[in-house]
Length: 358
Image (tube, rainbow, N blue to C red; front, side):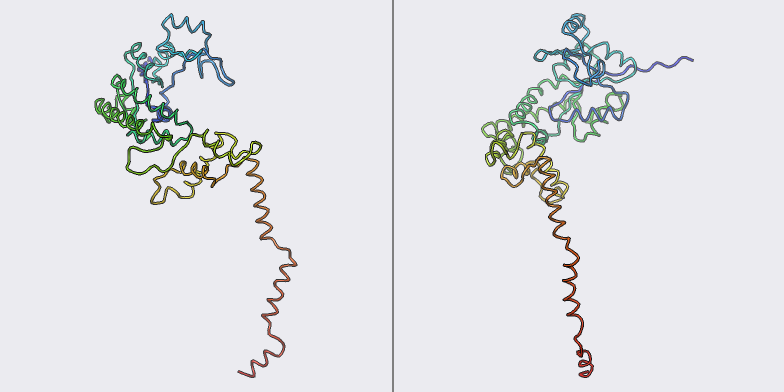
């Protein structure tokens, strides 16, 4: 009896606004469905320690890369600075023949090139529910400068014009729901919750709000002033470089208050986590983000970021102080107890006098 041949897998191309969470969605999809595999790209950059040819990348020389390009062996390719990257057609097709659904996470230009080279590829563009949520996700990470965030938002505005060329537009409200929706679309079990026309309309609405947001904030040295609500901005958020310079004005060159932008990111992130663990999100009014409050506290000198060595030293000092406060010598305790016993015991004759009075 011959073994039934597996159905050919799909080629799934996923794009989305920066900060929309498409990486998390793809990871969830692959974890729950082993038939999905991530495409391995080819590159001309050198392998880093621990990287294996054919696993992280196919590492090619510049000459070999040019030969593959001339032979049409790439579905899409791009060059950044002196490094070239491409999606090998043979690898993708071999995995599809095995019945796997191959995922490409690439920008819109590459996605459209893949569609030309492989017309049966499925192009999915992921968008957020609103512009407000996208801005909150980007600013809430606390890992990028204002200029970088504005650049990502500008890029999102530009990409909206290309979204109509995608097959489906999917809104990422919850990661699990989005992963389930994509899987249903790929396998043909269901259509997306939004029609393509509805998804494109929502994307255009988001583009309008992002454009208004950038215009509103372009004259201000902030990125977290909201144009989506009537509430006043909660704080002015300088760049981490500016914040580090300002805070270190209170220190010295030999002993700065914070030693790097990284220490600010990690320190304020830990402080924000501390606030959450202490029940901040359970309060009635938590409209201000814990991370924003932590940065403000640092800016105003109300918290201090310690190195591991400083933290260990201060912790040891406090524990020693606490131990000394509660630990008393045995003779001191005896001296303290003696007067109490004497005061409690009646003097000689006092008991008899009391009985006579009674």
